[in-house]
Amino acid sequence: MMRYNLLRVGRNMWLLTGSLVAIAMVLTSCATALKGITGRPEIFESQDYIVYMPGKNENSTTLAQKVLGDADKAWLIEDNNPAASFKRGQAVVIPLKEENIGGLYEDGIQTVPILCYHRFGKTCKSNLCISEKTFAKHLEYLKTNGYHTIHLSDLMAFLNYEAAISSKSVIITLDDGYRSIYEFAYPLLKRYGYTATLFVYTDFIGASENALTWNHLRKLKAAGFEIGSHSISHADLTKKLPSENDQAFRSRITKELINSKKIIDRELKQDTQFFAYPYGNYNQKILNLFPAAGYKLGLTIRTGGNSFFANPLTLKRSQILEENMEYFVDRIQIIQPISLR
Image 1 (tube, rainbow, N blue to C red):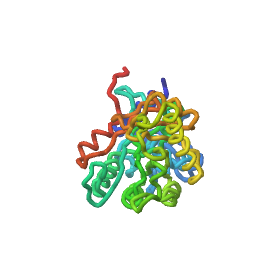
Image 2: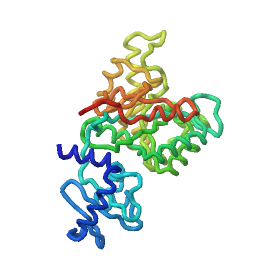
Image 3: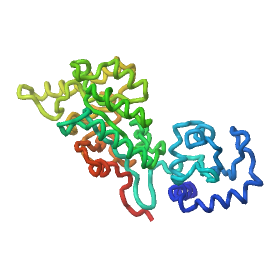
Image 4: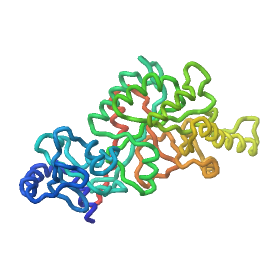
């Protein structure tokens, strides 16, 4: 109960800004030096959190590295402090524990939106293409409103109830393997400090000037992007070909799942664990093949977010098919309103 209450305090820290300043005035005289940070004492420290007065050039990232030993934990500090933090004279709460692994809050349940993009360009005519200008607006909105992109591996730990994630987590996925991902999306994602997961179908890679190459994918992986499978041929895995019997159909589908993983594993020297169903279609026969294929997560294109109890093999994913911002904002909701009081 104490850990839950601490998180509740963090999520409503804007109510306590004045109180923190008062704490600073009362406790500064008896504060001891924080281990690992020399020359700047904390205001208050317990086993669960530290109240700290940042220095001139300190921010959530530098404090996460100093106090928590991991700059990637900056979200933990940002989630527990108001947007006005890190101004002169403003105390900051640094949680020492990831209090809310399941994302359960008084006002609802945390859901993780997964966004799906395909192609990019200067201008676009197809609804599967998003213009460079619009994608920049999407990323600017995410950054301005405090969203953090996470990896599917982070989501997997969240689904397994093993680790907490930012309350404003979002996952960006890029399907098929178009070269415009490297030419347009990658520079913008890099500018905003975001990453994404690519789902590629292996027959397409290097097949034309419009496709990514394996060298492109190696560079993206080195930059922190994840690469998952989208099958070999992008065929609808739920549909039998006219000439196929049941045995031939099962054999072909098995190859689409297993061989695409083998190819990606070989080219990128990894253990591919994520699969996006072509056209978002799946059935129980496909799901039954997942253990043998070695996949841990399966992604659909059913609109919605994913709570910690979501089925990892049928995760919801919202396609971004329109240029207007209302359409985009509607697909990044992070709380399913349910009263837990």
